[in-house]
Image (tube, rainbow, N blue to C red):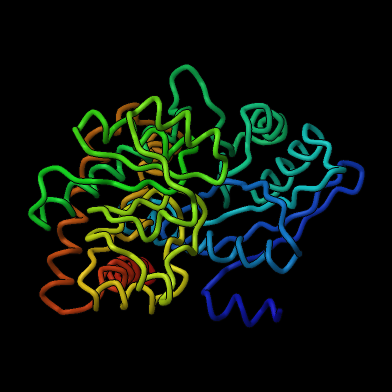
Length: 340
């Protein structure tokens, strides 16, 4: 991989490779943009197959964070850190060392939890830097709840746009955010299907919310009104679009679309797509408003996800293009205005 070329193509400002041999720490921190304010993004712990795969993930996720913040009208940019999970990783020492990397940036990057991160990991980071979202009695330490609520607001806009009052929703992935979304949808009277790569987790979720379980390989083609990808990204490709039988795709996962062309194919087939970084911004909104803007209640801000989703749907219909491209244009317009 030509790193400078990748940065140029993606518009990234900075990439940091970091390690601490004693703690078994290896990873990358990507700052995509600080045009609107300090870069904000979580740290992810994942067993990557290679360093290149880890870096690619950091690049994609950090760019998505910039667009998420821009579309949510927040005074911050996007970044992301990824740590390569390894049997030799000494978690407490490793995350404290990562905290020193964050502290060395002097406030240009504010970090928080992502996939694979525990409260103990955040506490270790906080021993080395105060530029971290570390749950407190007053703070939004349950970001999965805000994220799921934001997705529901976006889904509600899509359902109304499609003329649906109740819906059959297939949820792919019932981890913390996916399960919280299932709970919200149950309260709204939706019929639920759930799938997860961990069969026991799918069964437990199904029992709690009264859902039908599916095998993970079946969920994309399940007959339903809404497909909600809530696991890892890249699940919607040009090829998989042809298997989808839902009228709406709206989920909690980041980078749901493998390529922009997948969004175009969804639009061509008449499937409404809720851009992931628009609808899953609830956790970011609550975190930024609490930690950076010192606001304790983000209820009204989360509800505005509905309004943004309606606007994107209407513009896409008027112009005959995909909702993904409309969302990108709106985010890029705010970034360009900041640059001017």
